[in-house]
Length: 303
Image 1 (cartoon, rainbow, N blue to C red):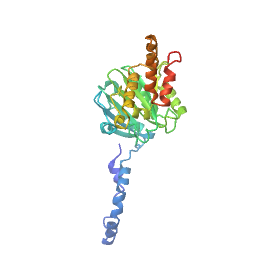
Image 2 (cartoon, rainbow, N blue to C red):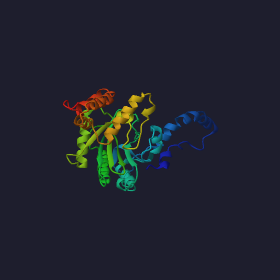
Image 3 (cartoon, rainbow, N blue to C red):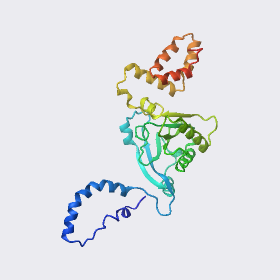
Image 4 (tube, rainbow, N blue to C red):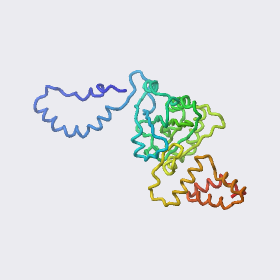
């Protein structure tokens, strides 16, 4: 978006008719200039609003990713798979990008658009994301394009009013459904996450019964995400076999819409209360988080 020749216009400020003595001085400063070259190069590449354009509070970068469904990817291969589209710093620059991009509803296969603040990669492991989380909304087919546009316009317009907490937004196109999410920096700040949730409901005009799920990136890194076709590399992180089996068990239950309480009802009806005990043991390895799930999903009368 910036003119590279304008960015370079200050490099030739010296007089070309200098005598040999000044040329010798230039040669002596060459090493210093070489050391400063990466910094000046970064400045030349900086995206800034053009004349008479309306600047945004932050610069943003569009990313795109597409991957084979059902194939696990490590964080390294995932990073190699995401492609940077471009960075913009003003309202006008945003529309130049957006008007030439395919709408999410027209994408096929497992594809994702990401819009993140400049300098933040759309990865759980990024320094700006690793302590945060995301609000997730699953959409039926046909709604992704409108919801995505409303979401990113609200984000660019700073409608969430949570300071620097917002990292970016993602729209994920899948075969049976589409998913949009907004990422923030601090998952433990409940007041901030609640404000983001309420603003998200408003800007997307969501019905009161819409299910909104908040996931921390720590959980995303720990567990296998069967629903997105991506597996994290926890299998080789020194966990014992029983823990690995239990993690697969728990992920499968969540993905297929089951719950411990449902299993407890079935077990009680079949006269097999020991099944409830087994489920408790499987979830118990997750510590306080597992106990919270048990207390929420298993009623005292059943388990």
